[in-house]
Image (cartoon, rainbow, N blue to C red; front, side, top):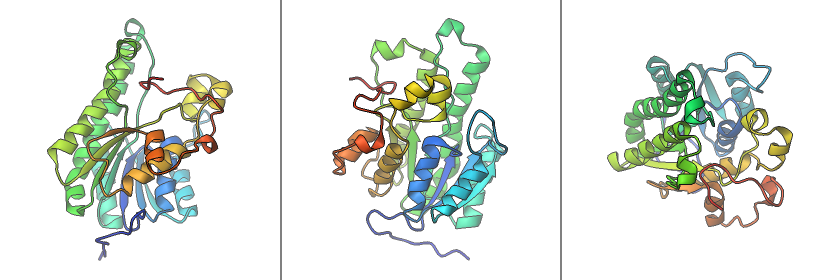
Amino acid sequence: MFIRMTAVAPGDLAGHTIVMSGGSRGIGLAILLAAAKRGANAVILAKTDAPDPRLPGTVHTAVAEIEAAGGRATAVVGDVRNEDDVARAVQTALDTYGGVDVCVNNASAISQTATTELSAKRYDLMADINVRGTFLLSKACLPHLVDSGRGQILTLSPPLNMSPHWLGRFPAYTMTKYAMTTLTLGFSAEVESVAATCLWPQTRIATAVIKNLLGGDEAVAKSRDPAIMADAAAVILTSGGSFDGQTVIDADVLRGAGVTDLSGYGGGDDPTLDLYVDP
């Protein structure tokens, strides 16, 4: 028998259960660690069952880190593109923690490739993970988010910047990320009792993707730590739904919460702006 908390103090996530796609490392894991320190439980749906020499961490090491931070977490090895795996992750949250309060659409595939050079296989991968995955996980969580009475969807996707500069750089990837955003805004409009928000970094974030694909150690040095996204996510998730229907930038969320000095997150004096963010 599960005893569910019906209210939490401001700034607290005690009794909340998060279901996240991905989360073995990087921004997703940073968000789960921040939530764990505030009392949240986590179910992590990820494919990373075994170590990869190119990438640190697995879904199992992520669980160990969360538990070391004082939280509770459960690994579900599976693919967000697979409806059965998604259903299994949600059922794990129900069986283990008694419900679902937060759905985080974190898993994403990237290929910054011109249209004529992008393979159909890579296009399908981005469309399936970014769009199908966001749809499947959110759909599976939604009835339980409604039952929660405090349900939230948080999607890591950008504001809809329709500048030709961004639309013309790599249209296929942009389309899939913008689709994540429009889905999330649609969920907000469709389900009044569930708050849905999109969060995006102002600058590049120092993750394995930046190091391995976008410039190595030099690029990492001009990127902020994933903690900035984690802290912004914590503000959103403890706001009582006040960010519902918005696409927000991490730095703006923190400044709105009174954090005026962002230098502690690294990146140097002039960190590199992220995609879809204008100077």
